[in-house]
Amino acid sequence: MDGTCTRARILVGSRTFGAVVRRTRVVRHTPWLMCGFAGEIAQGRAADAEAVVRMAAVLEPRGPDGSGSWSRGRVALAHRRLKIIDLSEAGSQPMIDEELGLAIVFNGCIYNHRELRAELEGAGYRFFSSSDTEVLLKAYHRWGPEFVQELKGMFAFAIHEIATGRTMLARDRLGIKPLYLALVDGALRFASTPQALIAGGGIDVSIDRHALHHYLTWHAVVPPPRTILSGVRKLSPGSYMLVEADGRRRRHSYWLPDFSRDPADEHMGETDWRDAVIGTLREAVRRRMVSDVPVGVLLSGGLDSSLIVALLAEAGVSDLSTFNIGFEEVGGRKGDEYSYAELVARRFGTKHRRIEIGAERMLPALDGAIAAMSEPMVSHDAVAFYLLAEEVRKHVKVVQSGQGADEVFAGYHWYATVDEATDDEDDDGFEAYSDAFFDRPHSEMEDYVQSGYRLRGDPSSDFVREHFARPGAEEPVDKALRIDTEVMLVDDPVKRVDNMTMAWGLEARVPFLDHELVELAARCPPELKLDQEGKGVLKDAGRHLLPAEVVDRPKGYFPVPALSHLEGPFLELVCDAVTSQRARDRGLFEPEAVERLLHEPNEHMTPLDGNKLWQLGLLELWLEGIESAAASAGP
Image (cartoon, rainbow, N blue to C red; front, side):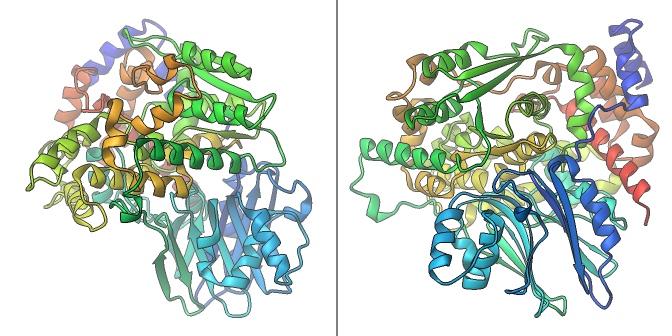
């Protein structure tokens, strides 16, 4: 392996830049990851308030505008604030309502908070702020835990009943906002990132073998409640947990979309579905303009983000800021889609900023992007979002993004492949789905990892098979869309956007993940979504609003050529990571498998065109940071 790494060093001549970066680990920003919170619910002792404050300190970039902490007996809460709604100190957290006997820490935005406030005021509740945080407190008191059904927005929160000792932990329907959990010294700790939990001390950072299997098989998607770390778990999207005073914990699922056909929709034709989709999307975009600060748009030039710009222009939004990023070409791979974004910007008269990233900025940014990952993410566009967020945050605090449209409206190629299984009554689509989406089969997975990390079974295939077998999705393509909406979407693109934008205190809002739009799309006949090589019903809607060149363009992805085609300092970085003493001591990967990848670093690709060597290197780099943080935190 040393010979291969030497060859990589020769590629960069005397500038062994990758090695220098790996040794010094110089990072201009410390983005451990809009708001962030942490807390502890202890049993048989007082909460460790100092540990909770340490946890929240790690979240400062996520909430740079203020901080606060509160503790009483067994419970301690802490918060970092990004001021978006109610910029006054009345909106600070933890928010304590002594009259109602409730305390809360909250991350997210409730888009219908004004409507809920009016309803609560009609019921006699008095408000001391204009924040959506206080609306959550009053709504919980009024309706109990099921008040989450009334919320339209993205959220994770903890609400504590001071008198009874009960605490409610909750996460929004699509998992846009994160909530991680750990058991430490008989206490339940929770935080917006695993890194925050680690800062409190006492976290088991060994590798969860089942999660490792998912990471290497299912494109780095690790379904809840697991994470790659044995001592860290995550609350599932669309669920809440009640923690009683005696420590009993009960999890409740409050939302799952139905992907079966609704007889009430039988009268709807193509035009009806198109109108329903654009009408619901229009409302979703309007909701996400709720803010006391300006809102911009991340404009890639694709159909999805272009539709958001068009609908905002239609609504009369003036002086809209839009942002687009591009990278240098590497290995013949194009790194930008400027022309499409600029076409849309000119059409709607936005204040458009084109952000060009040279190779010299990419490598130093990798350290920051990897540190910002709450879980390791192999998708190359993580660093693109990280660099984009850094630049966008200089101009606005809030942006809308087109993330999620492909998973909701069947924009990816594998949906058509899975749909072909419909003709075979004995085929539920699993084989087609796994062939198209899994990075490697179970047999190859076993060749990659050392014996201590191998499993008797194939948990990734088992999980997908069981998900496909659940009622509520009749056709194979419905099953694929459901698992991607409920699981893959949450633990890949949604998490990626939240992590990378929050690293710079930038709040990203995703109208295509409005739960009412997702429910509508789930009911929509698959053939209308699969039409026109994917997202047919959305393209039909776009033809009335956008230039034809944008609607009919080939499917594009966020291109980051330097990470899909490894050479020069990027190859050097990965070489150092997978052959380091730490990697050898950790003993995750078989040396022979690593050697094969290093010998031909750009010949081993996944079905989704991901670089298999990058997948191993990224995990080693992420674990290095986690283990260093755990060592600093102590027991």
